[in-house]
Amino acid sequence: MSTFRITRTLPEDATGAALRADVRAGLTSVPKTLPPKWFYDARGSELFEEITRLPEYYPTRAEREILADRAGEIAAALPARTLVELGSGSSEKTRLLLDALTGLEAYVPVDVSESALRGAGEALARERQGLRVHALIADFTGRLELPEGLPGPRLVAFLGGTLGNLLPGERAEFLASVRASMAPGDGLLLGTDLVKDEETLVAAYDDARGVTAEFDKNVLRVVNRELGADFDLDHFDHVARWDAEREWIEMRLRARSAATVKIPALDLAVEFAEGEEVRTEVSAKFREEGVRAELAAAGLTAAGWWTDRAGRFALSLSLA
Ligand code: AVJ
Image 1 (tube, helix red, strand yellow):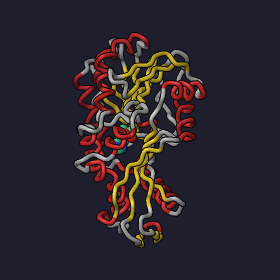
Image 2 (tube, helix red, strand yellow; image 1 turned 180 degrees about the vertical axis):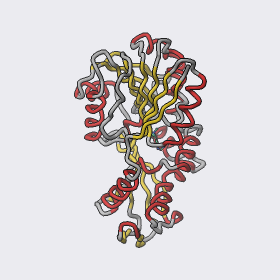
Image 3 (cartoon, protein in one colour; image 1 turned 120 degrees about the vertical axis):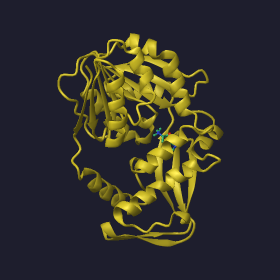
Image 4 (cartoon, helix red, strand yellow; image 1 turned 45 degrees about the horizontal axis):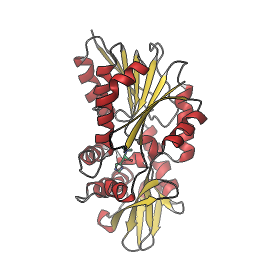
């Protein structure tokens, strides 16, 4: 018998309040910013899925290659009875891991999107005889609270390179909170995109078909719809830049000319100068030493490092 349960740890209105706070703080600061988590409404999630299929966007394929080739080794290094997946989305790559974890009893996908959790979770519970699927609607950047009674050892998977969307201080806080939710013998499987030549990186975030540009502008659509704002999407250009010093990609939206944008739900008018940019995403790229140092600082011990054959992306395993 398989079971599917879903628990909300996020208050119903938390999302609206958080969006209002983020937009107010971000658009009144200098330089202007908007956090990347607001890209992912239904349309944004679809655009992201489309990005993962673009010829320029290699991370998804590289990570899938690692899982396809190495899931057996990963499972041998941590024969988990529970798999917790943070930001599980469509759980597409997870199947490779689930197949390799032969002693798995429980799967806990954690995501802010209830629809993604239901779609993926119910299908998995149906397919896998005996697997307990307990989905959590939660913002994994907040404190992670796992349900009681999940059998150990537990493997926490954070795939896709999403760690790179957090700023260094947020990363440290996030890793420490994940570590705090782990018991001795539990493991963290972390996906990180690696530093490589600028041309490859910039192309991955500024594709020829303009899908990433649409994805970037989608955050303005979300603010228009949710907060009644009047952003004119045609008034902004998508920009992707490699910051060689901080080793991260920045996505920005640049105003073509001066404009005032009204945001009624915040009782706010935001002035844009011609050429002014809003930073919408940081996507940090890593090196092995750096990942190891950040894990160690959070109290996690490196136990495995796997890359795709071209060395573009890495999965690391660390232990509590
Ligand atoms: C959510 C980390 C997978 O930073 O590469 C894709 C999001 N942004 N194209 C990334 C994204 C622009 C993405 N991840």
